[in-house]
Image 1 (cartoon, rainbow, N blue to C red):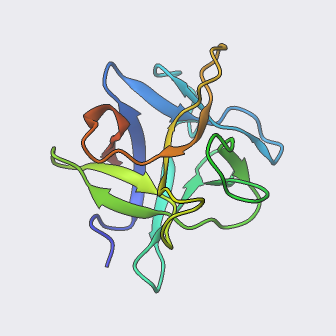
Image 2: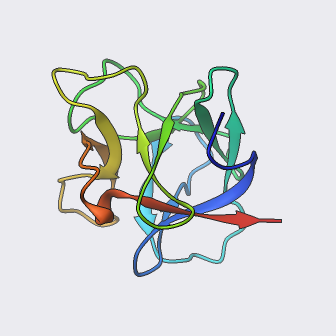
Length: 145
């Protein structure tokens, strides 16, 4: 069972940086930006899957937050046309979770949604080794009615 109910959420990091998808064509990059004010760009429908994992679908372009190709460290995270699964691991704060690739280690490490190491603007998202002790790797889910 998913730790939070199905619904529409903004997904953010401290200092109001939200997961953002701006383009309508799929696949497209997922970024981390301050509030844009544009409907749907920073809102995701969380849907619980039968196995207890979740999918995250952008409200604007209907793309699923995920990856394309073989999974690995530093793989870019995109909005794609295929449903991708994520596991949510509760972090230390309420409504805050690590967003993790389910199914165990890949190349010896669990992979989690995190900031890309690319130092470009706008900041991109990528799969990075999970560090459950790092509160800055966790994401806050804010429910939208």
